[in-house]
Length: 510
Figure 1 (spheres, one colour):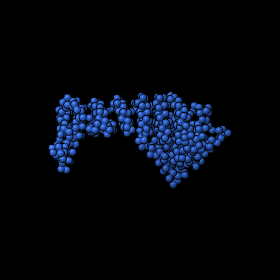
Figure 2 (cartoon, helix red, strand yellow):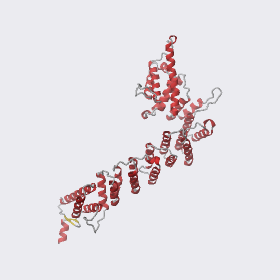
Figure 3 (cartoon, rainbow, N blue to C red):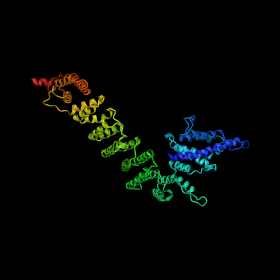
Figure 4 (cartoon, rainbow, N blue to C red):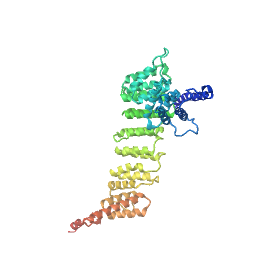
């Protein structure tokens, strides 16, 4: 960010000088007919817009500045000049400082919808200046031009442009800035020349003139190139990560760039399917005290909690997050829910239940149960009656408003997994035993016993949503079953052992 500000200020000073020079010349009558002063109105509008956008980027814009002004606004004005009938003359009136600052604004613009188009715009502005015999001399802007060429896939052109730039001037060999070296490394990697890229990187690390100028972006570019080309094994990449961390943890870098660098490397590791490096980077950055953000968690969840993910990888990631204060504080209900769902689908309800306990103890818990639906449904499908009831009571103790879906899952689990007790006495049994027995009796058609349980439950409590759900569901089931079977000509009689048909009654009495 500080580097961007330095570039902006340097270019703005040159543009301000252009404006001041014109103002001085207009004051002098002898200079009134100067062709330099009589710029076309479109050119002057472009100069003014680029200047305002530049100061806005520094946070120093006037309060009267139009809020809609942006790099693309300036580009639209540049396009008007390029489309003018006398474009050759008008383009020649654009000061180099204006063209340089326009390239800078396009390079740093944040609008994602114009992300790749802006690189074509940068190349057009640069090439236009060169074609007019007025090449831009700024090395910072030249590095932006090289970046645009790389982003457009013109890697060989990058190499040739740099070679021409390095031609001796006044018998002195130019020392390339670190930003230009970064673009060279990227061009070599993308041009399938990883050995040359690494030679250049090692030269930067060893050369005295670059010793204090190497930046984290160089390491990120090298790591991404190595991931793409698979030129070195992971053990060598781990060493580069440690070197990068040594650099990033210096006081010159604050939390924002550190986290941004972490996300960039994680994204590259995911893109090129190197989950081992991804895990290593995540763990090492946390161990070195570098904070994460929601983007970091999103990248890690996407890689580890997919449909084909190994449950061991999911569990390892979860343990890493919960073991770090920097990561645990970023957890949200949605992230907890993602882990619960992933563990349930991997048929590890024990891991999912541990996540639930952690969620209930976390400050993000807002007494919602939507994220528990997957686990309750699993308990219902696998007839884990006791687990379903225990989880319901655990969450219910916090005064959470239960959903109908949760209640039906618990009733289903009780119906499938509950056991009939021979010594069961409705009047002496506790609520959970009554719920279990009512669910089982209702499912097996023991109408008399089920109604006795429902009557006892209704006499004890009316506040438990599970009681209401059980009675409503089971009575509905029994009535529906009775109505369906009697409509076929069968007569049923409720007994202690269930419902018996007319045929069974005839056989029993004959």
